[in-house]
Image (cartoon, rainbow, N blue to C red; front, top):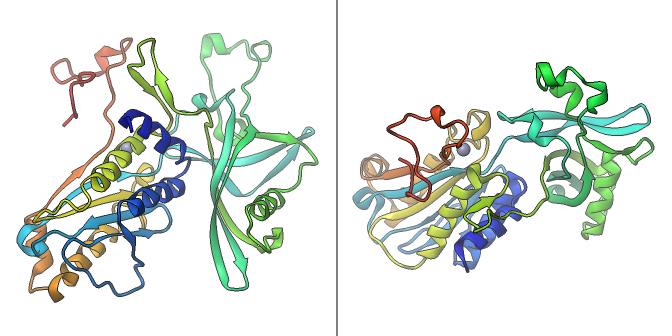
Length: 340
Ligand SMILES: [Zn+2]
């Protein structure tokens, strides 16, 4: 498949970090990577391909090399699955002035004005109480028809002299419909039942983590198709590159152990159990070392000394109207390859 078309389909399948991990796992599985649970004992051998998920939003995948990691090290690409967006608050149904809105919180350093006056949809994960214990389901409402409307110019003449001023608490809540709409929990339960989750009732929904996203399909842009127009390129483009690289060289043995790590929570500082400041990668590498022929003395420290990790993220291309924002001698060049 054309790599650009493949990137676009990956982004469209990944409206949230949870969906990005699910889509990455699906692609890795079809390349022979088996899911491993952190709570189980792993038996690893040469050429073994596996991946594990933490917190639904972070993923580590690896292919064990031909030599012990202590002798050949790891080659790792790191990227992040999250992007700035608007997320529903736990108590989110708001009724006022005849409308139903959903209260939202900003996540990461988002530009709020880019969320105004466009079609928005809703996706995320829902925790459900079942007879077999709590269960997490991914949900997506691609045709949700939500919108954060801006104020008409007739009621906001000052905007021309003072610019747009937005208060996230008052101005970012999307319109869901007219007042009288069922509560969010009812909508979620109905959606889960439609997806075949038996017994999904509003009172059995324990929690949700839902976010807004732009449902317009990712596409090529420009008369000659030179550009990609897509949300969440930071950093799904690097996640896609990492997954594609690891899946693409599956089974092509190397001495070193290949790995990728896709982290959630980069946009809010990484300081979480599933973020880059947590133990997820190191825990997994340690198990790769220990699982190789029963492990070896000082194996992890030796492996780390022989390893390399590329932290892959997006660089800002030069904006033709703001070229002075870049150092004149160190500007990224469009089509010029990776920015180091
Ligand atoms: Zn980034």
